[in-house]
Length: 127
Image (cartoon, rainbow, N blue to C red; front, side, top):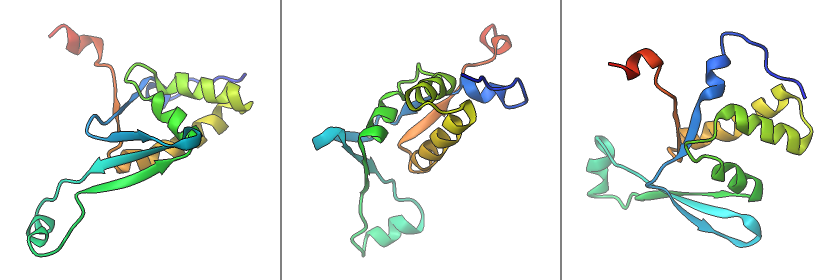
């Protein structure tokens, strides 16, 4: 099992994905899940909502692997731990696992299904 080299991106491995509490999760057959993300209308879309039937939520369906990865987004599990788990499960290199997880998480972040948290630096904690 190869580890990531120490470089300028090392801090990203300590980031912790967290599920958005406003998202509802419905378990489907075969381990799949359906996520309902509420939409907040602002600006022009708020005005348009008065005359047009705009949707108030968007729905995303995840397969069984996506459902498992979403379960890891508990705010405690670091991105590095997720990479290690994925790497071992599928016999991948560190970089292959990292790339696949980034590709999975990127649209979930854009859709506000998960957010990324980071630990505060030690000098800020004492203030």
